[in-house]
Image (tube, rainbow, N blue to C red; front, top):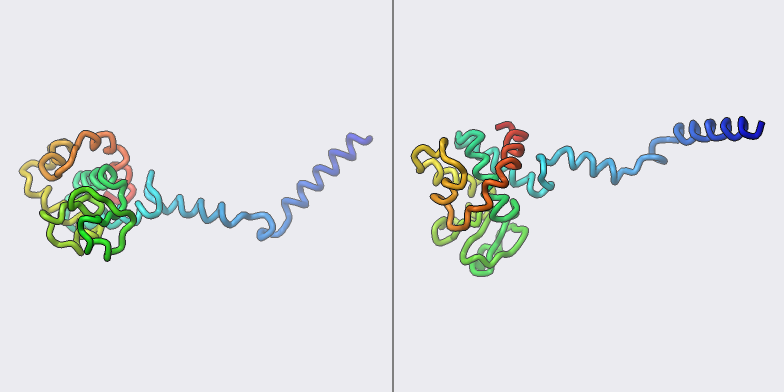
Length: 180
């Protein structure tokens, strides 16, 4: 008899907990984290997603398609983990919104564009505008649509391009989720 009473008690207790008002049982922190994770592009944080969305929008505007988008996302992930970098060697870059401060020569922004080459600092420190600069450089390369990303990197970057290929899968997923 006691076993039956214990089972009945557990059953009724479980139903009582189940019937409590939502504000008593829902952890809004977990719900917010779940919603934020759903809003982020695959494999990216909220901050990285913000920059990736700007890069994707510029890819659409500049008509470079999914491959151009992938090149830019791979570049951003490899160079800065899709973070906006100011640079101590370029003191005026510190006046612009940024996430980190670098010391790589005179390179700034998501793509680590050298200010000595890309002379428009406000553009360099803006995700969409700097992506547009990168797309302009890519479009100058005849047949870029059929080249591998490492070759394009070597023609447009001033850095080591060996790590680019390992990030293509992530970039492909990000651009696809962004509509390209």
